[in-house]
Each structure stands twice: as structure tokens, then as C-alpha cells.
Length: 247
Image (cartoon, rainbow, N blue to C red; front, side, top):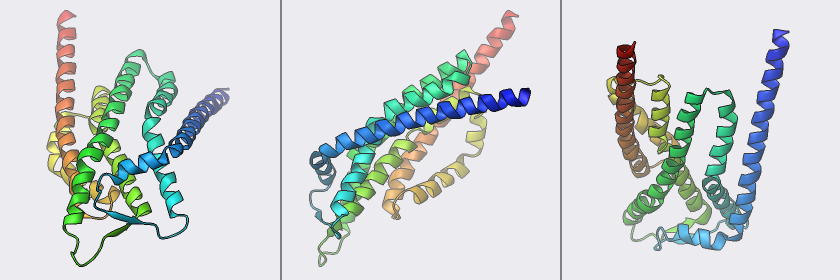
């Protein structure tokens, strides 16, 4: 009987997960189709990151594929509130009231940190990176960049920065749940910085400048995460002491 109940619960959870994933997929596809209608404007925003570059397409389908990639990236960013809402609706069903508050706060701030990462990349990281590459190019060689490779490069950078900027939010949630301790972060500080630059080398395009442009903000975000964990830990200890003093 117990095994039947467990099986039924598992089926219900999987059905709920399937429903949320379908909603996320349908909304993102719809947004991508809408974004595709404004593709000329969107591509111009990307190309304006470095007006000095000359772009070419190397195959008949390359322009189309570049537009598709950019439309998908724009859809992911635009639909991130709906994606977060669907994640919340799935996760909240199995949480206590206090845990729901923690997760809701994390998702709320997570959205703004994600958008902040994308904006930081667009206005700071990408222009600096592209300008650097243009400056070190040989004078005797004319730069003719493949439009799809350029769009893919920008998409990768934008999404990587958006995800990486979630680090303080993840640290906040794990600290509230008692999983992450500030003592561990401080003790492993040097190792974590090394891991950060290894991750930056893996997820970014294979060049040192891009890796540094991601690694440095990640290091700053790590320091912010340690500060957040310390504040949360002190707050929890203070509440514990006050609770013990009243008993």
C-alpha cells in the first residue's frame, strides 16, 4: 500500500514537472517567434557593440541560423520571469511556509541579478572584449567576422554572465537553509577563486580576455556571497540566542 502511494506521488510530481516544463517551452518558443519579427533591430543592437567590425556570412543558411540563435537568447531573457514563476509553482508545493519565503525571495532577487548580469555583459564586458580584439588585430589583415560566430559569441557571453550573477542568490538560499556556512567559504577562499577561473575558462569562448572578464566579476560575486552568508549566519545565531534567553 505504501509503495503504491509513493508511486502515485512520484507520478503526480512528474506530471506537475511535465506541465511546468511544457509551459516554459511554449512561452519561450512563442517569445522567440515574436523576437524574430524584430530581428533587424535586435541584430543592429548586437552589431553596434563594435561598429568597426565588418561581417560576412559563409553559407546560405548562416544569416537565418544567426537570427534563430539571437531570437532564442532574447526569448530566454524576456521569459525569465515566467520561467522563475513556473519553477516557484512547482517547488512551492512541497515546502513549508518558512521555506517558501526563502525560495520566493531567492527567485525574486535571482531575476534582477540575472538581468543585471546580462546588462553588465552588454554594456561593459562585451564592448571591452571586442575592442581589445580589434586593437590587437594585424594592420595588414582586414577583419571580416562571420555573423553567426559573432552572434554565438555574444549569446554565450550574455547568458554566462546572467547565470554567473546568480551566485550571491544561491549563496543566500543555501545559507538560509543551513547548507552553506561562511566558515567554509572563508577557509576555501583560495581554492574557490581557482575553481572560478577554471569554470570561466570552460564556459566562455577560448580566449584569456573573455575568461578574465568573467572571472573577475565572479570573484567579486564570491566576496559578496561570503558577506551575505556571514550576515545570514550572524542573524540566525542572534535569533537562536534570543530564543534560548526567553525559554
